Image 1 (cartoon, rainbow, N blue to C red):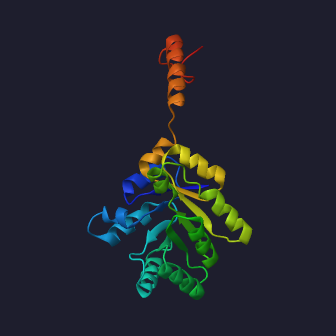
Image 2 (image 1 turned 180 degrees about the vertical axis):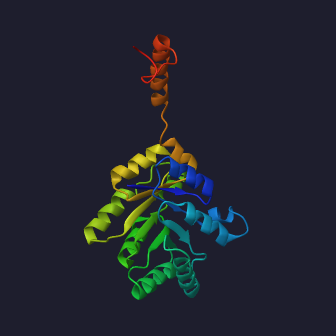
Image 3 (image 1 turned 90 degrees about the vertical axis):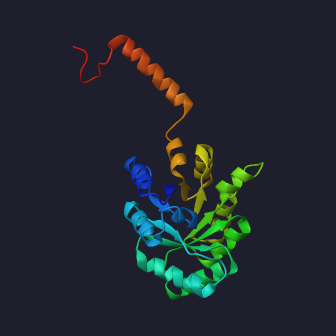
Length: 225
């Protein structure tokens, strides 16, 4: 499973990249809007900071010519960009039109909230289906299980579409990995949480206390005979 960071902040992206954790970046209109008034400058900085693909979203949901034109512009902007189209009738139409013109055109369909929608995305030939499982999981009283049934549907019908999950907290990250998602995207604070666990912290503190009690500040390089 690949790990992407959901961000438009080059500093966050570069920090997570320095940890050796991330494979790419996802953005959305809200994130880009937080980057300042120059949308193209923000997108360029994200592309430069990312170690791999960048998912960038078209604006709007139902104007088919606009969706297609925006998608083509984003594709020309950088070879790193995977264009995100909306889960809508026009979004699926744009996907089919773009793929008919160029089967290699990289496309994701975003805010997919049901197995039925995921089926339509896979059947239309998207490269990635971006499930909305993380936000749904936060909003509902029960866990949202989308990855496993979508994985089963795609396997049943031979769809090659990769599954992208939106992660909230380490529990979801692990569950998505077990269920077979291809990519998990998480905000910076959640990526950091993957490295942390109270038991790990407690045990390491105990190791350090025992070592320092016996050897002080010595390490294997500096202590002993």
